[in-house]
Figure 1 (cartoon, rainbow, N blue to C red):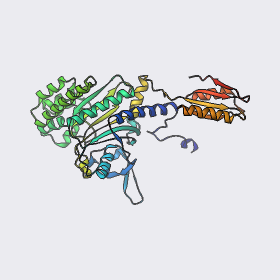
Figure 2 (tube, one colour):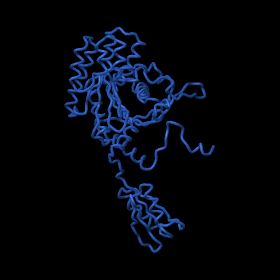
Figure 3 (cartoon, rainbow, N blue to C red):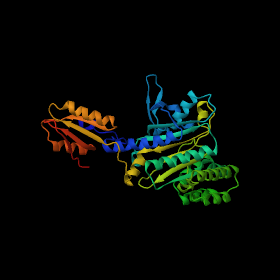
Figure 4 (spheres, rainbow, N blue to C red):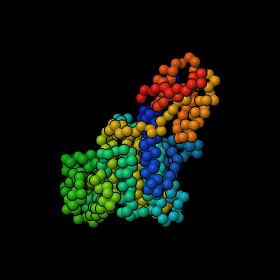
Length: 398
């Protein structure tokens, strides 16, 4: 039993020492970018009523949520997604506000993935929501923000794939396909199963959809495949967003994937994902959700993004991007009655902005043991006050 108590359940893990420091540094870098764009922090509860995330809101299926009950018998869930929580909060506290609002957040989400998927069941997201702006300018800002977050993280090689929910919906409308067939087709397209799509439909636009990814030329090809006005409007929107990203100087990071679909049904317009090498999943996801806040009683067209922090950290580690903490830690070690001198030195270093821990030397330990301890815990230097009052700098192996 005691052996079991020191282990974590499947799908969650402990993060400590250097890895925890790198994660916090990554979050700090991205928070600085969010602040520079004028996004203000918001924090919502880790668990909420089940109805906040049920399928009527377009979130995940019920069997992928961690559910439990409160004393009154209400069904609660650990949040599987933060966007609906923010939509609820904004609808409550800013119901009468008709200007655009910018919010940013950091928090953990909980998804009861199948163990066979090999994904973590608890993960960290940091993200942004631009509430109350339905313009192309807002779409472009959110995509530019996603790019700049990845650049601030230290990535150099990545791409942002753009798609649009309206293009697929327009093609389905044109084909007259029923809902059950549409769902099967969505899965085939998302998996780039060309043969499966061909077997299901003769609609050439849908048949070609899994192949419509790449440069801006894809948009021209897409226009030739359909006459549906909703689908064509989606392509026009993507063209306008791409042009605006040129003003940001960020077009080189952008490609198109018109076969990109999403598991979240609340998306209504542009959707995007960011990929880099070293991880098998997207490191950032986002899109436009113009009807989600209506579910909570507020009319507000909106667009947002979420960075998968743990996936991004994996990619940075595998790409050997330097994430060392610039704020190194100093240990001030003292023997006998040298506490006053050690404390004075520590306070001097702290006033200069240093990070300092003060330790009395255990008489049963050697200096070499303290040096080894410092090395294990990422302490960059050890200042030692011996019994004679002498101050020495001890070497620490990196």
